[in-house]
Length: 125
Image (cartoon, rainbow, N blue to C red):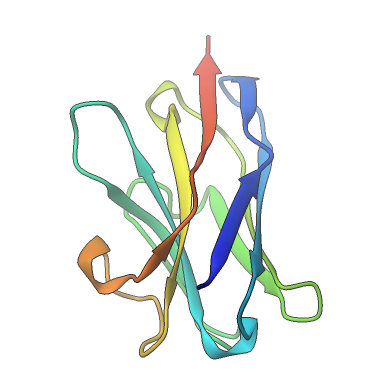
């Protein structure tokens, strides 16, 4: 069973930056496309960004385009989310997820099979 552990969340001011990491274990990282989702209490999980298995294609939700960057290091079994120009509305719990048969382009969380526990990101003014 794939295991995912997110880190790097915390408190940031509007306009600031944070970098999230998600370490993958108990599987072959290169066999999975990876994505980041976020969730606010009482709302549905929102697609943030996805990256294919090779790392050469990235996809972004409209709310974060131009501000966030997803990347992966297949030697370190880790996917990253660089978040710049943070806004109050970026406050959420951020989860990484895996997609075995796909490129992590889909915004539908039902197409992702493994999830981490999440890391809290709080943006304040």
